[in-house]
Length: 401
Image 1 (cartoon, helix red, strand yellow):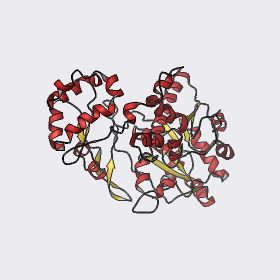
Image 2 (cartoon, rainbow, N blue to C red):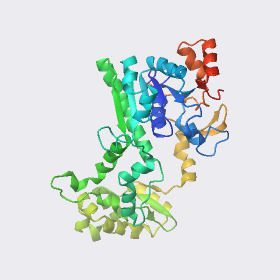
Image 3 (tube, one colour):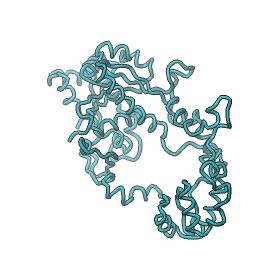
Image 4 (cartoon, helix red, strand yellow):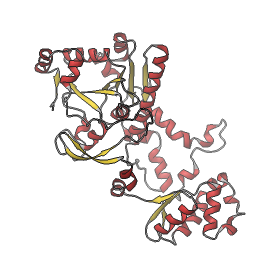
């Protein structure tokens, strides 16, 4: 089975992480994604310790399921190839800034004029109409602008820090994948394509403020912004006698059963700080302090057994090595051994979702630069002689193979 998006054709002019992550999700679900790369390849090919040049681990895991075609879009013949591919595509997605797209002649107006049914997607730093429109944006920059480093500093009392993940690129990429599919549904209803902008700044502002707008959601405000529980220094893994434990003692039932199990229910049952979720949130440090003092007296394994018995969510604190070796991820098939045709033995990440009627298969391995030029161009109507001419002219490049 080819997956729920079998037959959807995506022309992917994105690089690095945010855009490739969005199209990787769609490829995982069965869309036919043709990745258009510059002659030197996507910069993410050089990220991480790979076995061969241009095939680093970041690229391999962001571009599975795709085909690669290397085009020098400054060459008119390459632009003609892109136009022909756009004519037979459903979605054209890029994360190139608007002015550069206009210079290349692949802006929304030009693309939809050729193919009125095309969905043209622009992944941008900032939404059109605001004073930041057109500026370059990167994950770290947007993290700072949406207050993530300030929130980490407020929570732990240290200096501002970025989240040690490209959280902006990943979140916006997921949002973009959903927006693309919404546009596909709309086209099925109206028969028309459309232009779609997915901005990093506004997307992440919504992501952060959904939790932290708090009292500032009202006019006049009913309190300051900032979700107290999330900003409490007490919100951290609990120290145990031999390590650390993640435990989510959250609902009224959780607290009643936890305090009963450790012999403290009679002491705190009438304490107003424990009365309900509103009170516990207001007094997060004191409430978590009670749990922390008790949890420190037993081992992590003892707590995992006790909390499982009373159905309070809990787990150990894993490092990266432990995550990669996690028995659930192996048993579920999410992490599995695989062999890449050019890079050899690898650990493959699977598709997380499970589909009852349209299951997805194992995605094709991430391609070497330009590996699929002949197949893509043949499908677009070029014969062998024309393909050879495109390669000799420099319009089409790549390593192939």
